[in-house]
Length: 218
Image 1: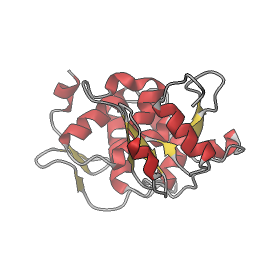
Image 2: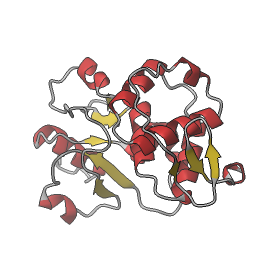
Image 3: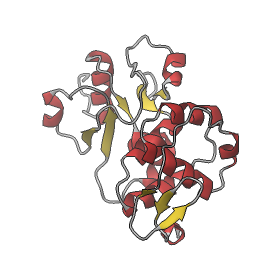
């Protein structure tokens, strides 16, 4: 920290990515919150900074006095490299579904998942009705996803559940971009998937979702 500075989670992540040189990026739900969807954060909870990468966090991270906590979620569902070195180009990052997000003017941007990748990362961790409701609320706001970027992320995503949930929710909200997503090379697996017992089957993507999604959106 600079003299007189205040310890913040952004500085911690910047240190991990640029000073420690760790292949970590901000992803999933927190990446979406950081980029303008913070109203979907759970009320009353301290923020959880979701990090993806094939490494362990240094021991000093858990000893910091911060309201936010850090959650390391492993490599995540993608078979993509995680380039976070300071000199990596924006083009290389984009190919991996990543970008540099400038939290504070004049500082190095934090490497984060783009919306397309972040939604799939979040969908891969959905394990029950409550998280399906949350994914559905987030997907409702995903009106400007880019079809080619979505296709690239789907091809590199190794979680069949994440891909089917992502597509089923996009279909449910009638997003215009969905019809322009080229599905060649996208493996959606076989057989049915059930996220909740007694739910409603999406016949297109063969995944069972809660039957009360409309009620949850209010």
